Length: 204
Length: 152
Image (cartoon, rainbow over all chains, first blue to last red; front, side, top):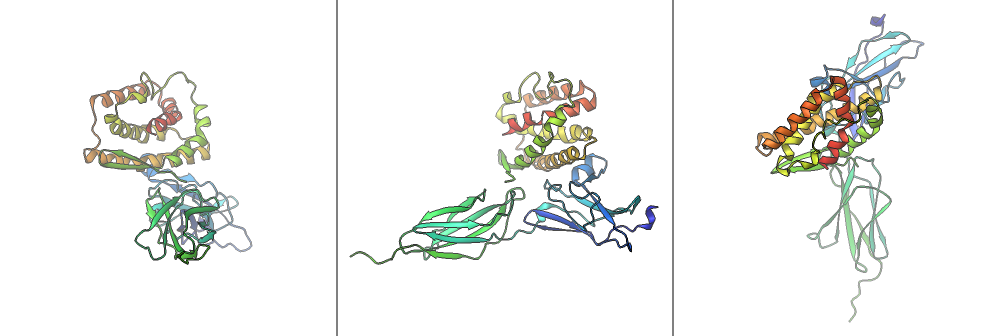
């Protein structure tokens, strides 16, 4: 029966930029394909629903040893996660991850950005990092670091217009990722500077 | 994006992931409402709409209603459909997270309960207890957008 199949071990969550993945060590059975099922339990289930467990949306009878649980971890509370192995009708005991996972602990990386000068227009191109992330973009004219301006970008379409630059002047840009749901931000990206078209000679 | 709405009750600040809650509810609304045979009766809006609540009572009514859903409603809405169960879990855990912040507001006396909100909530409970528990829970869950619309 079930005792033949050991429970999966080394269960942990990798979470970056609000994308959460559960991983575990494979259960090896020579010449056989072992499958896995994953369940989650939020704080609500522990405190108000008799500690019930809920099957994840993506990982029932999967052969992979990683599961995308992003859609299931959809509130900022402590979750527990468990995995079991299955081989035909044989099921292992549940392997339960030690401790809890709260999406507030996701690691946030600075956005990939590219500053552009289109004639006199200062533009920034930001890599899309998913619907739960937004960006805080800071920009200033080089040499006027005290007059930094800010723009919050929620929907990353393509290129974002920041400012109209003075001819020949150099402008700098940096940005950080922000997640409203957990009220946290990443560190800033490296600063990038571009120069506006036209020269800076002064008409006498 | 996962729009978080910040509700200000006096000096108290309560972030609620409204977009996530609405997305979860919208995904199961038809399924849940199809399980509610008595469409002519309302739990949240009978006899008076939530929109008539005085602004001074908003925090208290919100806290009462979040407690109502967490304590009484969600647990009786388990279905045979794991997709629906997942969405209910998502909403329930979001409500639990927000209710905790609302509770902190009450502790800081930023969430005073006037007579009207107490009476209003008693009416909602009476509407709820007038039905058998599963029907009442499904109806209440099916009316979640009434609460969300009123909050926003």
